[in-house]
Length: 71
Image 1: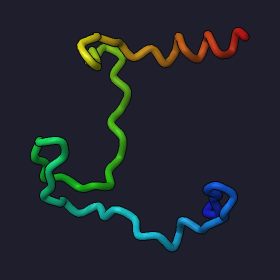
Image 2 (image 1 turned 180 degrees about the vertical axis):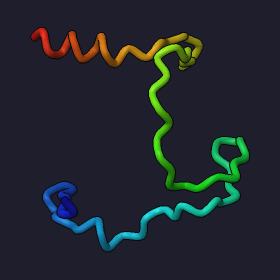
Image 3 (image 1 turned 90 degrees about the vertical axis):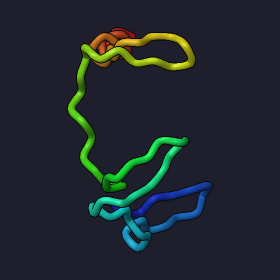
Image 4 (image 1 turned 90 degrees about the horizontal axis):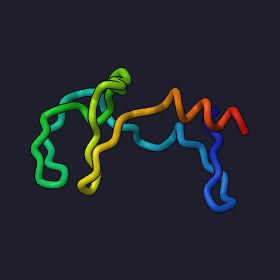
C-alpha cells in the first residue's frame, strides 16, 4: 500500500526519498553514530530494562496483548 492520507490530503509515499542503507556519519541528541539511517529493527529482548525519565520499565508486549484481547 503506497497511498496514504494526511489531514485529508492523499499522497503516494513511493515518490518520497527513503533513507539509504549505507552507513552515515551523524549525531543525534549529542551521541555520535556511524550507521545506516535505514535498518532492520532489533529482535525483541524481553529481559532488557528500559529507562525513561528516571523510571525503569520492562517490555511486556505479551501481557499488554492479553489485556487488550480480554476487553
